[in-house]
Amino acid sequence: MAVVLRCFRHLPSLLYRSSFTMVRGLPQAPAGCPALLLDGCRQCVRQMLLTRQLATKKAKGKGQSQARVNVSAALVEDIINLEETNEDMRAVVEALREDFSRNLSVRTSPGALDHIIVMTKDGKFPLNQLGQISQKSPQLIVVNMINFPESTAAATKAIRESGMNLNPEVDGTIIRVPIPKVTREHRESLAKLAKQSTNKSKEALRKVRSKSINQVKKFKNKVSEDTIRLLEKQIQQMADSTTAEMDKLLAAKTKELLG
Image 1 (tube, rainbow, N blue to C red):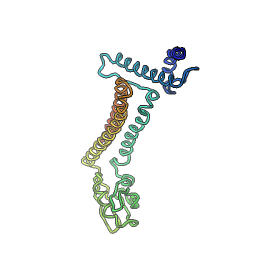
Image 2 (cartoon, rainbow, N blue to C red):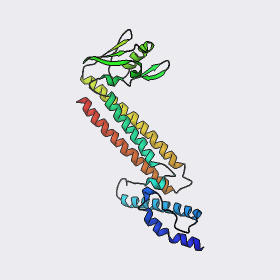
Image 3 (tube, helix red, strand yellow):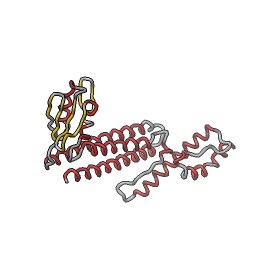
Image 4 (cartoon, helix red, strand yellow):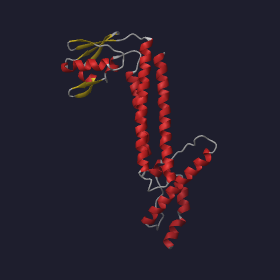
């Protein structure tokens, strides 16, 4: 009993210190506390801190449509890695940004053809791994398929179906790609592709969100409902923020494409 009382005497200081050291994890054992008892104490501290956060957000959220939460990753690292979730969501945004930069430009350049995926009998390959791409004039891009002549037809089809309004012409192992004039229809076609790319990215984001929430729900019998609810709200908040960023990227790209 004396040992138990000695451990709980340290609880106020644990709570005080832990509120300032969330990023470094929960506090270590006070001298004389058994490890088993400390583990229960640490769980208690973590639950009290999470409950305090939830209560604070609820209080601040009165009269508002939605209160924002900010859960410390260190407090829930044994449930879910929030930093990894954030990295996965950031990766979706960066992939969309790269797609916009590489593939959606009013002026078609040789680099825009590099990553067109070609379906061959041996699998899928980027066009620049099968052919030598060069720009012969401001109005013409040439793809030399001399190294993989058997893939010429497949490469031609991939270029035509790339959604870039390109109509390639074949001469042996040479694929000539006339650069289309910049018309209003061409601009609108590119803007439509930008919208489609954004929708695909949002679908990828939803998968990241669902995966993270499912991970949290695995602990519904081990932690409180408030903890589960707080984490679900945090993940949804992260997803909403990422979606808003993608919408801004799309708006800027659409404005650029439509002139």
